[in-house]
Image (tube, rainbow, N blue to C red; front, side, top):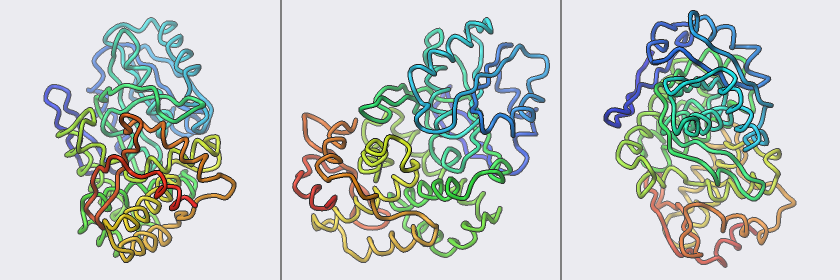
Length: 355
């Protein structure tokens, strides 16, 4: 097992990464301070892992709330139902929510925890690679609206993250690959040596070799923990973690949150951001080709789906939270390992890349 610490003063917390960490309930049980626990999960994950989690809740007053599987279920309606479940449980200010599932479950559970009595504890138990390396760490929570993704949310840090790679045994290959996109993103943003490592270990990661997988998760979480510690509420550096996201979220929204997985949108979005960077003279085509080659070795898409016009995608990109004063503000790069925030991007250049 490896431990990564997210250092935020009194709100610091551990990220435990390894095999069997969910079964090691004496470790994470200590992070629960009260006697009421609501487990939020989905209809796919709960039958697989809820019983294992429940062994660590013996002696507590707990119940579960399940949502449907997929991004389309990250809604205000389900937050309302989760809050009702907390009320039925009799949850007090020292209650805890445990998020058992992927990023959708974690985002919704965290937002529910932020809302109940103006903020209660929650623990992340991610069961997808995407959630382990990204959404479970850093305290971003929220829900989607029909007009855009994650437009409503709160910063609310968990008490702990329990990343048990054994839960990935039941993860479909497509979802596993989607999680690798976020690993590549960290290297592309700020760690050229990690990018080299990923090129060397791409085959091992594709085959889910445990040593390489734990190393990759830990390196990604360590990188993100450092960024979050320096810029918790995304006033500056943390925005770099959104490389590819403005493009990717637009593609996800255009597809009704059913056409692409989040990691697939990020993979395509990173390629579009790299191509835009090259068009603007910020980077070289060779870096773009290396990025595309690595993503394709990991089984990820690098081309946007057909059927969405550049104009439609641009209109969705205008709703991105990073934009200011009606102008596009994108995360672009100067090559592998060097990203930056670029304000006032010309929309004609964006349309040319989307075309």
